[in-house]
Every structure is written in structure tokens, then in C-alpha cells.
Image (cartoon, rainbow, N blue to C red; front, side, top):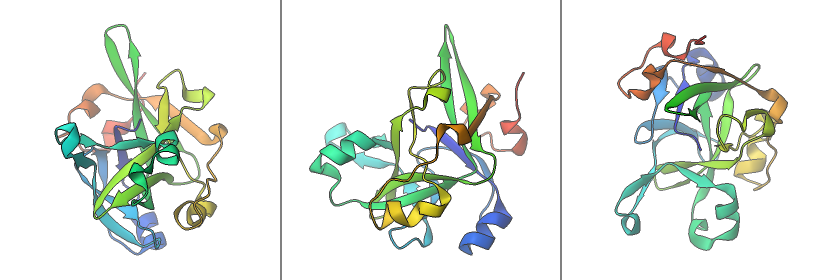
Length: 187
């Protein structure tokens, strides 16, 4: 699952995609997010899809195994959701501790689907390295293979060795919290 993420690398985003962003350290479902559409052009979309048959509950993620096996998503287009990192929670006894996941040498390119201007993040079973934190993770596409996911419909994901992580403050649970120090490592 992917419940929150960050995007703050203004210069890198502008240099690679020619779009200005406002840094956001606490992006949540229901926010407008930066997406590379099915033509690999940067645009903003709404994170989540509401279905009438689910009492208009906001769906932010879709399982890869579901989109591969069910025709429901056939009319959705593929996209990439760009992030500096994403957040998953580890459940321990009475606590849910947030962990920030990132790549050392790249932005995080999460596979997604969209219809109209609503997007969801594709998730997979977590890699062994991070499965002790959460059982699901975003499908992260290798930077050199964005076109493969979006246009050729092939999966070229990163390996688990690329993902780094550390524990962060529970302040990230408040959707109004949005500052750089939110993502600092917590001891």
C-alpha cells in the first residue's frame, strides 16, 4: 500500500519535466499529484478514485495482481507518479510507526493508472527487505524504463537493494503537517 509520499526536489523536477512544483512533504490521497501521463507528459491529477458501488470511498491504490486479472481496469491508462519517497506504517503492539522509503540515487517512479484526471498507485507484495514494515509497497519503475511501463506495458522495476528506509515522526499522520523536518530520521 502507499498511503502518503513526498515530492520536494524542485530543481530536479524542473530540469527533467519542465514543470514547477511546490515542495510537499506530506502528500495524501485526495491531493493533486504530479503524474507522467500515457504520453510521458507531466500534469497534475487527483490522487484517488471514488466508486459509487463502494459508497464513494476514495481508492488510492490498486493491486498489480488485480489489474492484470480483472477487466475492471481495462479502460484505464498507465502513468507514473513521481515522488522523492513514500511512507509506510509498521504496526507494533499499540503503535503505528511511520517509515520513510526512498532511493539513494533517483526520484521514486511509482507505477500508476488513471482515468480522466484521477490516478491510483499500483502496489505489489513488499520486497523481503521491507516486508517487516508493511506487506504491500508501490510498484517502483526503474528510471530508464518509464516508457516500458506506460507505453509498452512491460514491468521493469527496481530491485529491493535500491530501497532505503528509516523511521520518522508520527507528526506525518496529521495531513496539515507539511515541512521539511517532517521527514527527518527518528531514533
